[in-house]
Image 1 (spheres, rainbow, N blue to C red):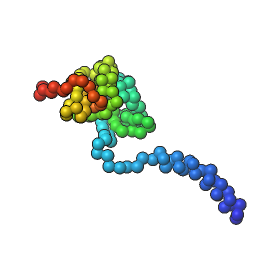
Image 2: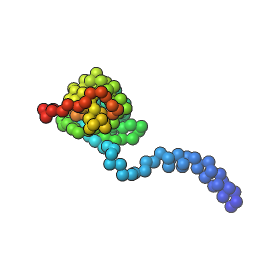
Image 3: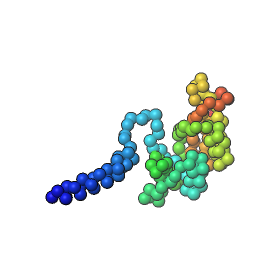
Image 4: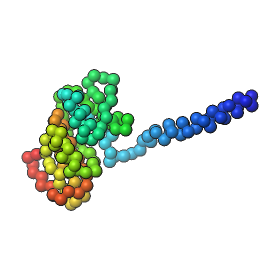
Length: 155
């Protein structure tokens, strides 16, 4: 009996780091209304869309188990759908470290400019907006740029 408990104690000691690692990888759910949790983007061409977003944001794509969508992921964690079909997402806003660099990369990848990078809200944030090659409208926010935003009602 003592040998059993001794073996159990050794096993628990050996596996303790494993259990600690599992615990550290779990995500605690908290109220974070300032972060996008899930969104849907639409495309008629998975290959083109995955290349575009992988090059623009470094996103990964995972099989979903369905033929009509892929999961959009970063660091192995899904946070959105890439849906095969007609449609368009509007109003998606992402924070980026260098707004001008990401905007220029989007243009080089075939995006269409809606608003060039500009500073808005009295310098609180910078903003740019573009349509990806599939019609989804994406806004990016980031560090300061020198141009102030001049909005008009036609865009």
